[in-house]
Each structure stands twice: as C-alpha cells, then as structure tokens.
Length: 190
Ligand SMILES: [Zn+2]
Figure 1 (cartoon, helix red, strand yellow):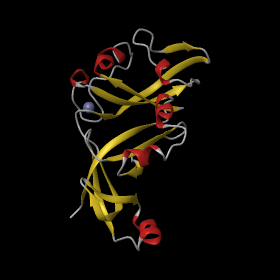
Figure 2 (figure 1 turned 30 degrees about the horizontal axis):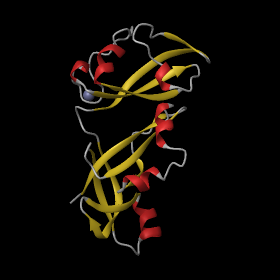
Figure 3 (figure 1 turned 180 degrees about the vertical axis):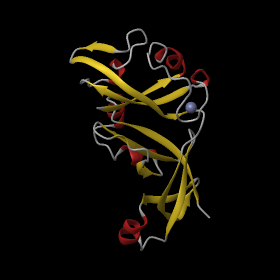
C-alpha cells in the first residue's frame, strides 16, 4: 500500500534518522536531507492505517503499532522537496481575457481540450513549475495500489475553484496520505 506524508523543517532531520536503510540524499534534488525545509515522501507500507501522522515515529520506525495494527515500512522515496521545483507539461486553453498571472484555463490533454473547449481557444502546451507563490493549483494523486501519480491534475487557475473539485476537502485526503496539493506558475512552451 502506497501513501504520502509531508514533513516540514522541524521534522525532516528527525524522521529518517532511525531507519535501517537510511537515506543519504534527497531523491528529488540529490542534496543532503538536512538542507531541506520540506519533504514529500512516498511510503510503501504493509498494514493499514488511516492516519498519515502514525506511519513514522523517529524512534520506532520499523513496526509502528497503531490502533488498526502494525504498519511496516517496506520502502520510501522523496517525490518532492523545497530544494528543486518540479515541472510538468500539460495542454491548456489560453484565456481570452486573462486575470494577472492566470493566463491559462482547462488543463488536460490536447485532444480532450480540442473536443470540449475548442471554441474557447486554441490548446497551448504549457509548462507548470512548482511555485509557492504561483497562481495555479493542482492535485497529485497517491493511489494506495500504484503510488504517487507524479503529475498534477484538476489544475485550476483559482484556489477557490480548485477547492471545489474535492467536495470532502483536500485537507483530509492529504492527511490520509492520498495525495498532495501543489501550487504552480505556468508559461507557454514556445
Ligand atoms: Zn530535495
């Protein structure tokens, strides 16, 4: 079972110190883990736990006893961090009347956009860059069977509209390890 967990500055140093297969450098950027302020980590687990906060305890990492039974960490890898922004290329429709910094809308694959939004504008290949100040919001799924999807979907140029994509709220999905919210900036690929 795959799940995601996120660690901030205070936790990063502690979290991996107890692991037998200790991670030397970040899988995402290659830098020392201690230089990080934020890590997004995919865990391959055996066992069931609804709450991501239980998966890892710095002192007892290998078999954490939880209310629902033991959770064993088989493997883990960093899929995102603050040291190296991730980039993705998706197709989007260029807004006829863009609001500042939000030039694109309707992200997806070219064929679908042409079919459903062709009348709104020409599909444009867009590069999205992870950016804490970015005007675009997206969700990267972490499926329990297949793991971190790697690429954002449900990309929206407004936070409010993005939040509406998940009626139950993204926060709970994140806490349960089912994915991450990424904030991005976007530029057309020339
Ligand atoms: Zn890194």
